[in-house]
Amino acid sequence: MNRPLLPPPIAWLVLSAVVVVGGACPASPDDEAGGGGGDVGEGEGEGEVGDGGVDDGCAFNADCQATLRCGCADGACLCESGVRGAGRSGVDSCVDGNDCDTALCVEGQPDSGGATFFCSGPCDVDDDCGAALPTCADIAFVGRICIRRS
Image (cartoon, rainbow, N blue to C red):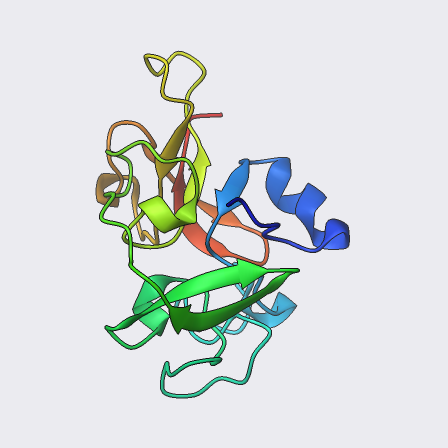
């Protein structure tokens, strides 16, 4: 089931650079590129930041305890029970964030051999990204993630 990722006022910012169909929730504006200096995934959900337990805020699966996944609904991302995906960033195609080990599924290159969406995840440099999403870029309210070439 695809669930909305970002609330409407924020969604157009992310969609201008990459189409996200599941996973990483919006961070606070302080966590935007060049902002608060926190790592991608540090307590970016709408829930209370904690130890990654049930109902704690999250942006990626890594923010949750190993037995939980980051699930998003109505603009809020919280750690919840459920199986994590195994898709690798920039390598594996996905339908939504539940297919990806990071919980983030984004639009790939238009000429990517028929698979429109690929798993993405946090990155520091382009070399951290797989061939399907070769560019590491700052995405407002999400952080640095792998995206398609612009």
